[in-house]
Length: 74
Image 1 (spheres, rainbow, N blue to C red):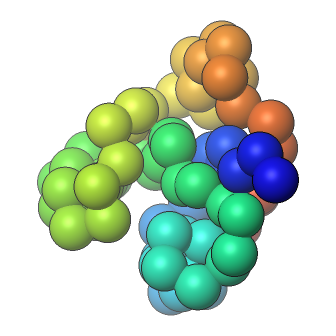
Image 2 (image 1 turned 120 degrees about the vertical axis):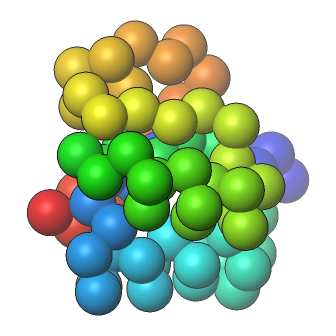
């Protein structure tokens, strides 16, 4: 089965929890993009979870061609 490639928006308390769950616990899902206005938190979280696509703009994140789904936790 092909993995569902997911982007997540928002890294507050619940957004961070959802991103961690997608990256580590959801079978057949791959966290490929993160978006948050806090650049420091964005980079720290993306580094820790191994996410290469990082955005402070939701509109820019939507331009990623290989996203299958977007989770909004903002």
